[in-house]
Length: 130
Image: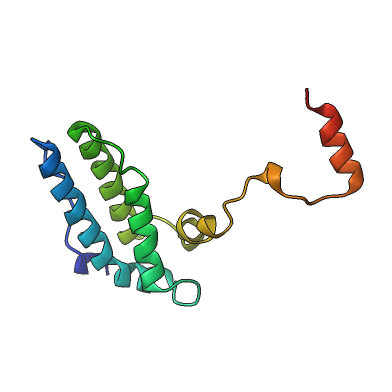
């Protein structure tokens, strides 16, 4: 199955910010084209839809939208390409994909903000913080 997706690679260095931006869009297109293969490899149909995975990929890219250095963008593209290669080549297991990209997105609250636990634990935590 990995042979059906074209081998991904990042060219050496971007000459300008515009070229780096173009490469980011190309990476996004390649990642979106890989989603059906990823869904098939990891049997994700029962957990997430392809459009949800597409929005997860887009949010990962948007998370670093403030970066303006072409060298930093190239380094992030390299890391993203390597991550996509590992996923497509089935170097990760299903629970890695679910934990990092699917389930890790749903509940992003801090542990400290949750109002869970007994009254004893609440008092304990309150009294032991300086």
